[in-house]
Length: 188
Length: 265
Ligand code: SF4
Ligand code: SF4
Image (spheres, rainbow over the protein chains, first blue to last red):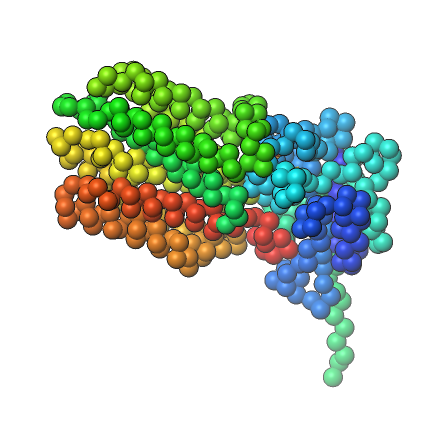
């Protein structure tokens, strides 16, 4: 398998502090309401505990990116070297097709520039041997960057409950499931 | 519905109406005996519908001047194929209108109809993306085909000679019955899908838009045709209004897959 960078989301460690999302905002200063990375709380139907659990999600830099496939002006490309899916905003005509098409809601509409935009995996930082801003900022190391060509974590899951399953896109993302809290009941 | 999508409502409904109008005109002129009808004004109407639709579609782009670039990705993007298909269809309809002498040449009529239907298929593929589970299937194509048949036949009635009105009335009645069945069944089928598809079904069933579209665009026209045994002049207007309402529902009621992140899919 070719090199394919992916986000590894360790829900066992994530404390839902939003630092990753804020680091992204701090790095790129997106327009108000334009979000590249967001932190989603697992609903009670999946995680019915007093403790809560979270997934920090952004673009998944899919193996077969629907954003790239549907864009009429070829404003997306996938990097050969590491599989990062890049959106070239100057080419975008703001048709909204990628926004409608990506089931992960990663591309967003920038109402000021009237063009789409999304997580870039901080490819400029990667090229400079630095981690993406979100990964760098996570205080618990719950958000990491892995290469799927070498990744060998037996307990990792690609489609945990609470995350849409689209095998035809093959999203480059892996999860560690949140821990089930230990119930300690006093014997009466 | 975001303001971005009203242009798409207008573009899709008007261009599909033009496809239906041209296809029915081709059949009426060349596949049925008797007078052709007012072919030139009919094809001029199709041209005007297409131009109005294309102008509307520009308003949906953040950068309308980039529209010509939209055919750059023919290898993968259905939207590029749609843009090319509608472009070629419009060109053929303009040639048909300009060259019409009582009738449009049979080969040109059927070629235009075929290209229009292919373009309509491309539009169906464009609007069935993975992002909307309820629509990520053949249904958008079916909806669009019904629009072409219903509004196209309705508008064709304006240009049809009395001798051929029974044929047009039959085409419209059958299209409306099929449309009624499809629109009544589909939202209830969506209820058996996953969370997002089910929510789309519920949105439809509890939306006044959905029921307005059934009554205005399907039930009232069907009753009128059944009672009058022909197509009264006001019926096509009602069918068009129903389609526009239905298309607003299409673009505003479908739930996006990402809306349920963190919940069971
Ligand atoms: S998650 Fe969406 S935007 Fe990101 S690569 Fe996949 S299809 Fe494209
Ligand atoms: S919004 Fe821009 S990037 Fe997205 S499909 Fe349209 S032109 Fe391509």
